[in-house]
Image (cartoon, rainbow, N blue to C red; front, side, top):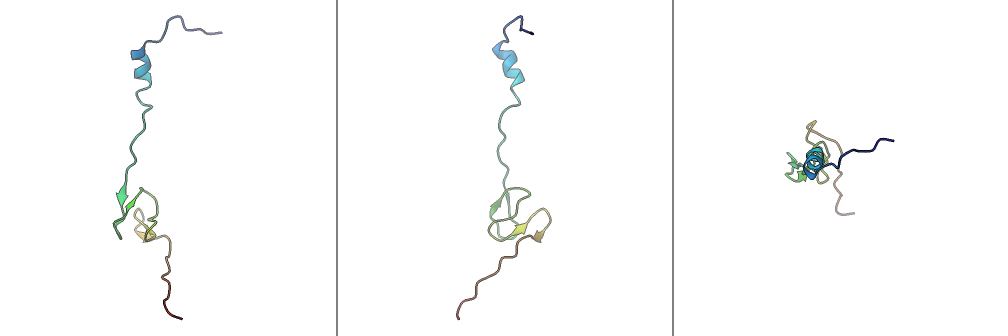
Length: 66
């Protein structure tokens, strides 16, 4: 069974774990309504897809009256 001969120092351990940090979430803004939207996601407010510049979800407006 393999056993380390020497203890791993904090500096060496930190160098190895330097890439394990979390990255901040990048927000973009919808070109149609201006709401903050995650990249490659459909806008929850208007249904617009920025990456393909098209409407992904058709939102029907409710009729008043009747």
